[in-house]
View 1 (spheres, rainbow, N blue to C red):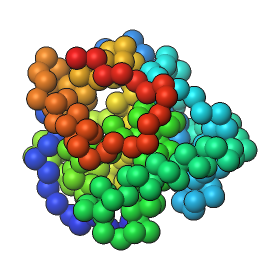
View 2 (tube, helix red, strand yellow):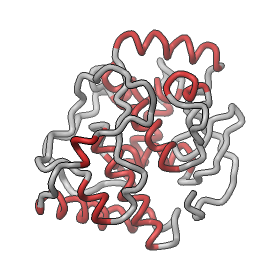
View 3 (cartoon, helix red, strand yellow):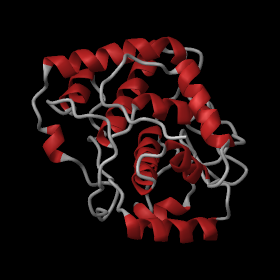
Length: 242
């Protein structure tokens, strides 16, 4: 696991409701739309392998119908990994990283590790059809980029994932303190809730936090997005519904 996140406890939680209630909500939600649980190989740490995993054509960042739930989170998008690199996409990814790096510097001091995290966030967000800036905003609010953060409710890691998600979606060996595995879970869960709520970020973010019917959590995330994670303009971004 990358060493740049010091152990800490976070007061924020991905699901503040009790685990049994959360599990019941999850099972109902899974009946409506299956989770997209695919991503690039964990070996894609270098710049070249990361960029090779990007789609050749830049698809609009819109919420789409999700495919059936795979057997485990280990399932990968082999077709995406085999897609040739496109110079325009490579340029866009690097421009995005350059735009995000100054804001991330106050959380992650090491430049090389900062770049590695931005690469992974960009890739996971693209595969889940999420704006990568939104993912950064959620991480800031949930854990302040501390991969070892554990909340009083037991939520773990960068995106504060409750351990019951492993029983619902993954393998017993999945380590939620592994930042890359945690990103896989978090982006998948958030993409699922956006699909359930038909692109309504306010309701989807409230579901992610376990506070559906309240707006304090979506407001915190949106403030963080607007203040710290305004990236290069992109066509086709999902519009926030209030």
